[in-house]
Length: 177
Figure 1 (cartoon, rainbow, N blue to C red):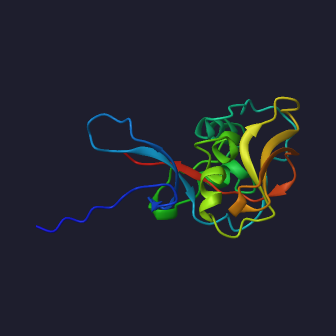
Figure 2: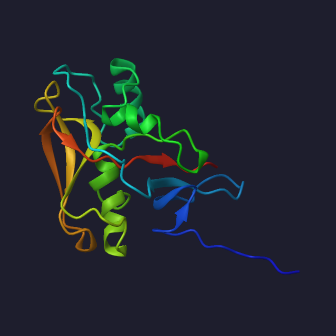
């Protein structure tokens, strides 16, 4: 019997995105958890929001929770970053969300930190990407973003920007167990 075995690792394309976080502590189901980054940027740049109201999207690590909070407050207007992610259907998955700041640039399980040295994702140098995290200093007016300036060297800077600035979006989703 010939059995094909595939290895899931950082940078692998799986369930419509680049794997950047892996959780192999799942129960004995044989499944693995983790998170994937959308293979392509959204087709247009968008604002985080036009509003200058605090939406309580303050988690540094829970992008799905932040996205839910933002969409609950703003609705599904596609001109904004978080609602745009909820409308993504890449790979026929409908559970995409705008990542929290630490999911983009926060250490050992962050998309750009993990994928950058692997040369992934492509075409991101010099780009500004929204996260779903409002700043702690001025949450009504500012949100956290990531400036990618040298993806292959992981030269990535987290910055605070006015919510009405237009920036790129790269959505993420949790792997399906």
